[in-house]
Length: 460
Ligand code: GDP
Image (tube, rainbow, N blue to C red; front, side):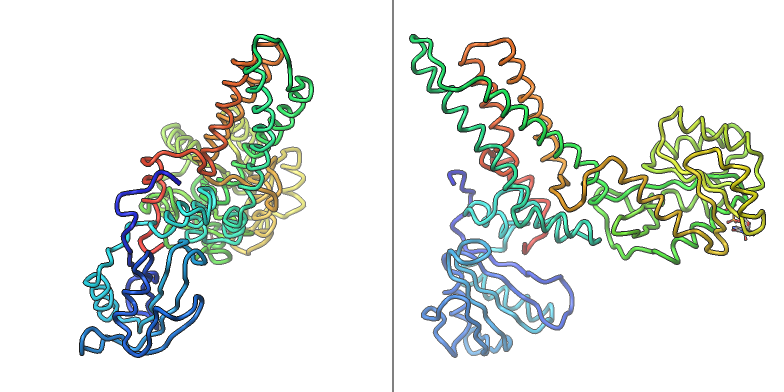
């Protein structure tokens, strides 16, 4: 790799475990001096002669002062996370002790690591490509089974492999087209245009599949925003409580959302449903009473990925029908939820509203058919998406690069149709290769890298 960063040769140190008190706390050192620095604090054994992938227990000392009793793990280059020499010092998990050991490392020449710098080094040393490195951050942020799976798949190279094979096939053709340019006087064609056309079409299909998977990827990574809408007394807050009791998600922070607008999150089948404006529901301020209220509700509905229109099964059918057509006009993703069927009668409700599609019949208070509602919510957001087991694009940067790949493939196809000269064709192919390379990091610039890795936490 050519684009080495300032401070690239430094040995870096950071806390790898979360800040605060814990049973143990791990400090990680990486770089040429990593083992020497650990060794300087570890008088009981000479670490410099110890083999890679070994553990050593002993006292950590700085001069005569004992800092802690610790375990040091050694990973020698290139067989480490960063590809450099790495020493991990597992101390007792007191922030005070850890700070003392960290300071001692810094006094011996280490420098505090920047956010994501360990992973950045892993990337620059070729241990991971860029898509894999980004998936490390996604894995750390994952809070559901599906986001964990998608991140693991990418981190372990599933996505990169797919792109790599697209790129390889294109490079082979590009080489032939470029070769023709060397023989431009002689009007030869090394690259069979028909075969090339077929390849480009196959590549377009795969690219558009990946692009489509981003819808699911987005759902997996960021969750689905849901608005519960309905008249006063329809049962909105009852439904909210019922759903929360059954499926409240354990989340501390969801990327891309602000804490004050998002209050409650459900985890249904590994998908996070973020219930928006739950404060409004609890305070009965978002009810559809008059046209101003209706307008407010519409605004809220437009912000949501999914709208649950909740109504009392007693409600007049034409009113529900009006609401339905309004939501269709607005092209919203919605479900009609008839509530209180325990009182109204399920059969009667089904007979009354049966002609509407997108209907679910429940009794929120009695937890009746709420499982059906949840299944429908999952189905509604997954419709038309690819299977979760296949490669799923979850990263917006990859998505945008793939859109560019798609565009340049279309240009290549058009060029072939119009039989444009080889040099112009070669340009389009290069552009396509460029964007494919951007995803995995064959093609990068420093600003972009800094931006990507600055989103990581320190110590990763
Ligand atoms: P909101 O104004 O839409 O938030 O409605 P609430 O959740 O406050 O409910 C209004 C009233 O309907 C309350 O008395 C609830 O107990 C009642 N309610 C809600 N869901 C059901 C249900 O499924 N069956 C019956 N019988 N009553 C319900």
